[in-house]
Length: 176
Image 1 (cartoon, rainbow, N blue to C red):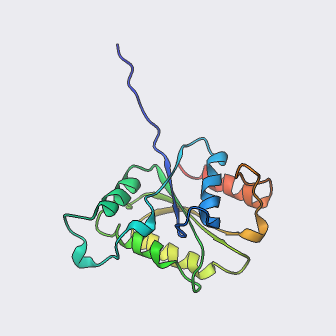
Image 2: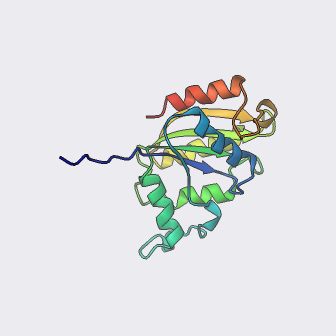
């Protein structure tokens, strides 16, 4: 009898700062060392066109299709964002807008993070992110403000031991 191949659904990571070397992108990449679940980066948010309700119909642009497939194929989503003008970066808000009518975010477990230089930065960005996730009917399992002045990375990109690493590890355990 042939064995049935099963693949483990990954955690999808979404950086509110799409540059691959940004602090948020580095933080998300480091999470792979804190969980046994595969971690996969989302379609680059800066590849998505500007959302307009009139354009939210077939045929959708290829990046929009890929972005929605990313969400649909993920076990859970981890979003980390900086704060721009004390709010969400436009590229992240635009990406979330493209999920509005698809239903792929409904009930999806989400870990919401901010990763800013120091406290109290990020408070309003986190609240704005939570409002958007609520409007999408996501299931936010945890929200966590993280600060760059409290996190150190090793040469391989992993988070060095400390309070933030411990909190992130515990937050990841809340995901399915």
